[in-house]
Length: 342
Image 1: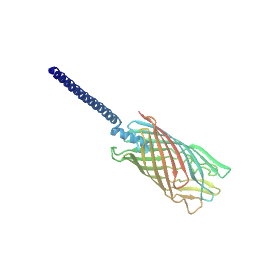
Image 2: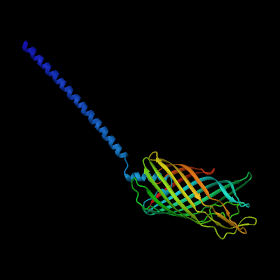
Image 3: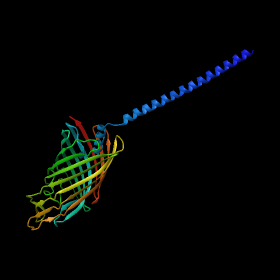
């Protein structure tokens, strides 16, 4: 009897020990499974992060898209790329016209401009461009008089060169040379009382340096430019009765601008910019008048806010609004560029 009791006790002890060991093994298995599950989660998270990380080339392409929403001046496409841009802009600015008292009369000037621009990349760092504007201008004079005009504007040709290869953390530099042709309606060949001009009436040449730099999480951009405007000579423009304009010596122009652009997502970016220009005084020479009439130096400053929306790999739509800080003028602009690899 005593032996049977001892045997039962030993069996019960072994059974309890085995059960405890099984519980410990099961707990260990559960911990291992939990660790494996957590490890798999971390692995998937790491893979997801690697997918979200972009290469340096992709980063530069993203910066390019952000700047594309600001202006073509800051980007160059690869060799044999062709781009076609459509820009629609509306502007309200105080206009200037010469009156028979030889003073500047400021009137409300509404301008709607449709512009077709083309660009072809001859090399990876060189592109040629052209710009063809179609202009509608409307002036309301007083309460019962108005003028309007629709015609082609001044055509522009340009050359852009990127002298240094762009790289991370470095300033990207683009040099632009441009020439504007007097293809629009010249202000020196119209009757200012009944007609409006759609061009400047003279040739002009410009040189601009455009720069940009990635400063996480924004892209900074700035530019500096100089324009030489040729004189208008050999005129026989009757401004008013017995007042004949013979020559205009145009003042040169210096311009600068700067701004910041920020990508809100892979599709949407925003930008803010400031631009300033200084134009030297122009001189108007009239027949039988000994002294020329001088317009005086002029300055212009504009603050602009814009947004870019990347709708596809081919195009980034851009919208901007600018307000004049030196007058009461403002502009609204919509731009749709399309890029092709030939």
